[in-house]
Length: 114
Image (cartoon, rainbow, N blue to C red):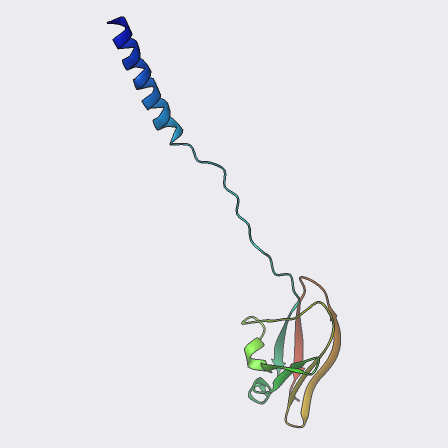
């Protein structure tokens, strides 16, 4: 009888320990990649419609229209380093600037339509 009670007690203890150990949560680790490439945006002063449709060129590569990268709405990520940023529409050049952009920088360029 003593042996039967002891086996029952051990079985009960094992069940309780298993139930309690199931309540613990193992430590977790979350990994993510942070994109630190520089970003550029554009602010338009003046006739915004004419400039909004102008094209953005980074080192003579067409990156799309200015309206795609307006400040507060979207940014254009580029590689760190010195770049020539140009905004033009047809024969009109609204902005041409050589700028160094380092990691983590968000640089707004102001375009005057006047």
